[in-house]
Length: 144
Image (cartoon, rainbow, N blue to C red; front, side, top):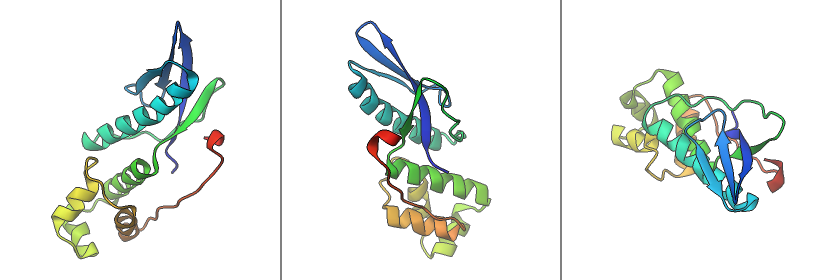
Protein backbone atom coordinates (compact mmCIF):
# COMPACT_ATOMS: atom_id res chain seq x y z
CA UNK A 1 0.00 0.00 0.00
CA UNK A 2 1.26 3.47 -0.83
CA UNK A 3 0.50 6.24 1.64
CA UNK A 4 -0.30 8.93 -0.92
CA UNK A 5 -3.54 10.74 -0.16
CA UNK A 6 -5.64 13.09 -2.30
CA UNK A 7 -5.88 16.65 -1.02
CA UNK A 8 -8.00 19.59 -2.03
CA UNK A 9 -6.43 23.04 -2.20
CA UNK A 10 -8.79 26.01 -2.09
CA UNK A 11 -7.82 29.65 -2.39
CA UNK A 12 -9.57 31.61 0.37
CA UNK A 13 -8.73 35.31 0.49
CA UNK A 14 -4.95 35.45 1.02
CA UNK A 15 -4.63 31.82 2.18
CA UNK A 16 -4.58 28.44 0.46
CA UNK A 17 -6.58 25.93 2.52
CA UNK A 18 -5.73 22.22 2.33
CA UNK A 19 -7.98 19.34 3.36
CA UNK A 20 -7.82 15.57 2.99
CA UNK A 21 -11.06 13.76 2.17
CA UNK A 22 -9.80 10.47 3.65
CA UNK A 23 -8.51 12.10 6.85
CA UNK A 24 -11.00 14.84 7.76
CA UNK A 25 -8.95 15.89 10.79
CA UNK A 26 -6.04 16.80 8.51
CA UNK A 27 -6.56 20.46 7.62
CA UNK A 28 -3.88 23.08 7.11
CA UNK A 29 -3.07 26.20 5.15
CA UNK A 30 -0.33 28.24 3.58
CA UNK A 31 0.08 31.76 2.24
CA UNK A 32 1.00 30.42 -1.19
CA UNK A 33 0.31 27.20 -3.05
CA UNK A 34 3.94 26.10 -2.56
CA UNK A 35 3.78 26.79 1.18
CA UNK A 36 0.41 25.01 1.42
CA UNK A 37 1.89 21.91 -0.22
CA UNK A 38 4.77 21.83 2.27
CA UNK A 39 2.30 22.24 5.13
CA UNK A 40 0.06 19.54 3.60
CA UNK A 41 2.84 16.94 3.74
CA UNK A 42 3.56 17.78 7.38
CA UNK A 43 -0.15 17.77 8.23
CA UNK A 44 -0.59 14.36 6.61
CA UNK A 45 2.29 12.94 8.66
CA UNK A 46 0.85 14.33 11.89
CA UNK A 47 -2.64 12.96 11.16
CA UNK A 48 -1.27 9.52 10.31
CA UNK A 49 0.93 9.38 13.42
CA UNK A 50 -2.00 10.50 15.59
CA UNK A 51 -4.17 7.71 14.22
CA UNK A 52 -1.42 5.16 14.87
CA UNK A 53 -1.00 6.44 18.43
CA UNK A 54 -4.75 6.32 19.10
CA UNK A 55 -5.12 2.92 17.38
CA UNK A 56 -7.64 4.49 15.01
CA UNK A 57 -7.84 2.79 11.63
CA UNK A 58 -5.90 4.48 8.87
CA UNK A 59 -8.00 4.32 5.72
CA UNK A 60 -6.41 3.34 2.45
CA UNK A 61 -5.97 6.32 0.17
CA UNK A 62 -8.84 6.86 -2.23
CA UNK A 63 -8.43 7.78 -5.86
CA UNK A 64 -7.92 11.48 -6.50
CA UNK A 65 -10.93 13.29 -7.86
CA UNK A 66 -10.81 16.11 -10.35
CA UNK A 67 -9.13 19.15 -8.83
CA UNK A 68 -7.36 17.19 -6.08
CA UNK A 69 -3.62 16.68 -5.83
CA UNK A 70 -1.76 13.74 -4.32
CA UNK A 71 0.31 14.25 -1.17
CA UNK A 72 2.73 11.55 -0.05
CA UNK A 73 3.51 10.76 3.57
CA UNK A 74 7.18 11.02 4.49
CA UNK A 75 9.06 7.72 4.09
CA UNK A 76 9.48 7.23 7.83
CA UNK A 77 5.80 7.84 8.61
CA UNK A 78 4.74 5.57 5.74
CA UNK A 79 7.05 2.84 7.12
CA UNK A 80 5.62 3.24 10.65
CA UNK A 81 2.08 3.08 9.28
CA UNK A 82 2.86 0.00 7.21
CA UNK A 83 4.44 -1.75 10.20
CA UNK A 84 1.54 -0.86 12.51
CA UNK A 85 -0.98 -2.13 9.94
CA UNK A 86 0.98 -5.35 9.34
CA UNK A 87 1.26 -5.95 13.09
CA UNK A 88 -2.47 -5.39 13.66
CA UNK A 89 -3.39 -7.61 10.71
CA UNK A 90 -1.09 -10.38 11.97
CA UNK A 91 -3.05 -10.94 15.17
CA UNK A 92 0.22 -11.45 17.04
CA UNK A 93 0.92 -9.99 20.44
CA UNK A 94 3.92 -7.75 21.02
CA UNK A 95 5.45 -10.55 23.09
CA UNK A 96 5.01 -13.06 20.27
CA UNK A 97 6.53 -10.71 17.68
CA UNK A 98 9.41 -9.95 20.04
CA UNK A 99 10.11 -13.68 20.32
CA UNK A 100 10.15 -14.04 16.53
CA UNK A 101 12.53 -11.07 16.23
CA UNK A 102 14.68 -12.22 19.15
CA UNK A 103 14.23 -8.93 21.02
CA UNK A 104 12.50 -7.77 24.17
CA UNK A 105 8.84 -6.75 24.08
CA UNK A 106 9.87 -3.18 24.85
CA UNK A 107 11.65 -3.04 21.46
CA UNK A 108 8.45 -4.00 19.64
CA UNK A 109 6.56 -1.43 21.72
CA UNK A 110 9.04 1.24 20.56
CA UNK A 111 8.71 0.08 16.96
CA UNK A 112 4.95 0.62 17.23
CA UNK A 113 5.30 3.96 19.02
CA UNK A 114 4.76 6.80 16.50
CA UNK A 115 6.85 9.11 18.69
CA UNK A 116 9.88 6.82 18.61
CA UNK A 117 12.33 7.25 15.74
CA UNK A 118 12.73 3.63 14.76
CA UNK A 119 15.33 2.99 12.04
CA UNK A 120 13.89 1.92 8.68
CA UNK A 121 16.07 -1.21 8.80
CA UNK A 122 14.43 -2.25 12.07
CA UNK A 123 10.93 -1.61 10.69
CA UNK A 124 11.77 -3.70 7.64
CA UNK A 125 12.98 -6.52 9.91
CA UNK A 126 9.64 -6.33 11.69
CA UNK A 127 7.75 -6.33 8.41
CA UNK A 128 9.66 -9.39 7.20
CA UNK A 129 8.88 -11.19 10.46
CA UNK A 130 5.22 -10.45 9.71
CA UNK A 131 5.50 -11.81 6.18
CA UNK A 132 5.59 -8.36 4.57
CA UNK A 133 8.30 -6.07 3.23
CA UNK A 134 8.93 -2.40 2.82
CA UNK A 135 9.56 -1.20 -0.72
CA UNK A 136 11.20 2.11 -1.50
CA UNK A 137 10.40 3.80 -4.80
CA UNK A 138 11.17 7.11 -6.36
CA UNK A 139 9.37 9.29 -8.83
CA UNK A 140 9.52 12.89 -10.01
CA UNK A 141 8.67 15.26 -7.18
CA UNK A 142 5.70 16.72 -9.03
CA UNK A 143 4.16 13.29 -9.70
CA UNK A 144 2.83 12.72 -6.17
